[in-house]
Amino acid sequence: MRTVVPRGLARRGFTLLETILALLIFSVAVVTLVGAINGMGNASVEARRTREVQAQLETMVLEITRRPPQEIVAGQRSYDKTSNVGGVEYKIAMAAMDMTNQDGQPVQGIYSVKADARWTDAGHKEMLLVESMVFPPFFYNAPR
Image 1 (tube, rainbow, N blue to C red):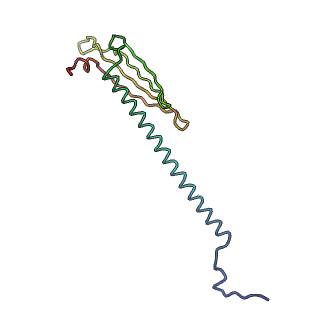
Image 2: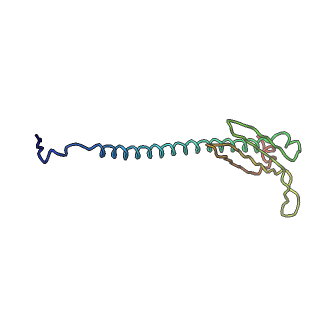
Image 3: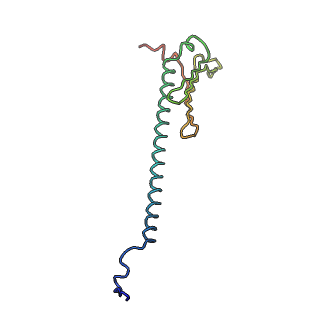
């Protein structure tokens, strides 16, 4: 004997295929969203690391321009120092510059300062460079 189902009650629920397709679409959306959030997090970490390295470089340049090493003050023409802090290799170099004024007279005591940092971030080699010039007598002969 056959059971007769009224027309309105024949399709009340979801079929298995509809449920699987809905779950598939939802899963793809979630995976895409998680990937985007992960990418933003990685970018934020890299930006913070770069800001920290940049601040350290600026501090190193400021220190050496305000208080150069005794080797420079003693009359040597250059100074190099390399250090490794937190996986970042910092190198700072200070060298005398050969400059002349408008009359062709040599100007003594002006130094070029270069500081660079090198590190590896997420498998990529990164580098920052800071350059400046300094005239140490400007800072040392001033009354305190």
